[in-house]
Image 1 (tube, rainbow, N blue to C red):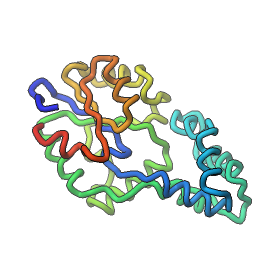
Image 2 (image 1 turned 30 degrees about the vertical axis):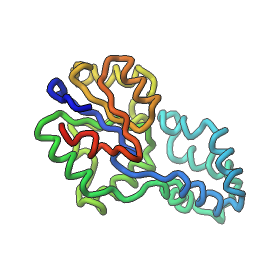
Image 3 (image 1 turned 180 degrees about the horizontal axis):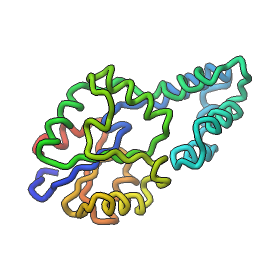
Length: 211
């Protein structure tokens, strides 16, 4: 996207847009704890609905850890903290230049965050944000942050985009949404929001260089 003249609002995704992620690291950590083959762990993950329930806010941390423990077949010799650490392993350091660019964009646009996520990951992201860029929380960077587990909705359900537009009185044609997931991009486009697909080779720094 090169024409930002009508854009007044930018909504960012979090994972793989702002914070780099590597799910293979979590699968490796789960395999180590469970002593199961990595491919078996990946299949169990793909076949389990409670990860999505966690993102929707249908279950809390306690229930999530119980179900994760059962999924991996680990007993109490594996602590909750070890499970949390393994779950968080996918979250990588945030490049400082990404945070600096978000801060500079805030002088021209209303900035928001909309993420399919869970409270364990958000707690860790806040820690990584401070370590990476000395910003104490995501809420310092955005006018508002929306997390799926608070909204009870997840992308790409069009209801989540409509809810965000309604809550902040945003016009879709004046709003740009950035996400790494093509389904999420298409969901936003269905309600009239302008979209940009972030990829490994086209980061938001590159895509928003003319903004």
